[in-house]
Image 1 (cartoon, rainbow, N blue to C red):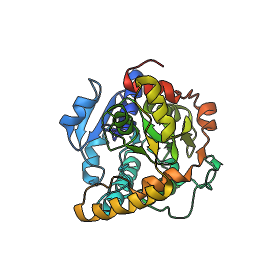
Image 2: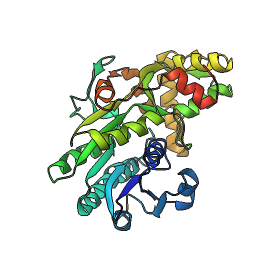
Image 3: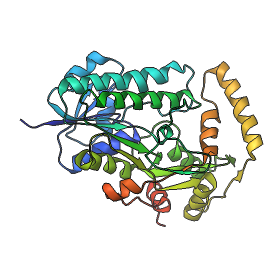
Length: 321
């Protein structure tokens, strides 16, 4: 009897990249999806799609039948939602449900998609996987990811054979999702970005993220953590790359004081309209953190040769550097 690999979050950038890397290895893949018809359009042919939701523990029983490896990449990446409790329901309770289902199925490996947000570093400081921040972070998204990470750590003592992947801001090939770098690049190309926010973020291409997850499953010791980041880039860096590729102008960068005022104003409006703010506070704060994650371990132990940002954006745009 062949053993099945289960993937959650396959309609997102990370989960979809994981599925592609598994299919390239001719693995028998099953994905959990709230909307199976949508998932079938987004995953390679031959991938088994089952209806389920990580927030509904009972729906995971069928999904885990015959499963030997589980990848948990489902989650909410948004920096703002009208109901902040949704972050906990999906990111925390969903992870808890996956843990219980994985333990009941006696999986051989549980690959958890965490985030670089769980680490501690001072402003502008380099950091690695060695120090998890014990203090709650500033946004509901960050706190939910911290809690999910802690839940997986706690489950290690119950025999969950988990490894942790910590992607930076992901861009690249894959289905469209919540606003992120792909959306930002698209706006630059369409000249719909009138100004840039100050600061930046570490970035990584989705193909590298998917491959790193699978190599971690294959090679890493239980409990190992891997930061996935190619480089730190400001929004101006990204805009200049798009300018070189497509000739579009580089928008001016807003002063930080103006960006903060705009963020507060748009969040106030969002609290009334229940629509996402133009500049979420959490996004702006993250971009001012400017800490540089080191992916030395992923390069050395997983053999990941991260795609350079100019090449990745060129691939995204179907251009040549």
